Image (cartoon, rainbow, N blue to C red):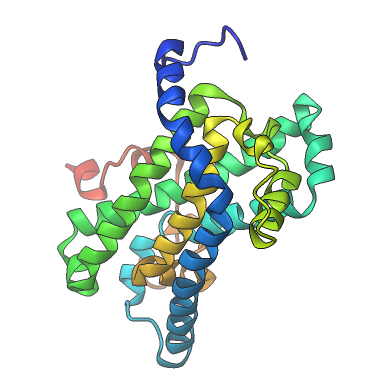
Length: 270
């Protein structure tokens, strides 16, 4: 994508690449071990929490959950999971998508959309905790730990996303074949064919390292583990009408405009 305006000088990107590439080249071949060691224990912890909540119920009341779920975090997380699973399980399909601009753009937009859902969902949780006393009270002391976990996931993820956006269209270089080969080499203890890993862009190496660590980190959070399970019953899909008991008042265009603009009914009547 030479010549495209990306806001970050090419010299800066080249310096970053030269600085981190030797470190990444040494770590990437061992990513499968890292993924298993990090994800499996915390995934088991998350499964135990889901099982306890299924029998005991949620540790949050519905009002607090509605606030924390106002941005559907579960949609973003599970969307990312299944998109990555599709890309890895069907490398041939991915290569055919990447070969054409339209299908490649479709995959990129869908995956980045899920990524933004995840980022905004996590940011919503942090903002609700910071700004609302009731939410902090409901989450208790463990809420601070949840916020620290979310912050340590958000910052690296934002950094990787910024670098990816500034350098390459990542879907065009992602192949399930590379991922499968990395795992096969690791668990057959064959590290003599790592040239393809060294040739990958820096972003791909960062992605392979950060993804399992971020996933494991998320499972360590009681709150995010809970919010990963969708609860459609908390979504209110009522019609756009207001009124008192026994009567319905039409939701006019004027009221809709005031509502969107954030003007309360009290202020409107002053």
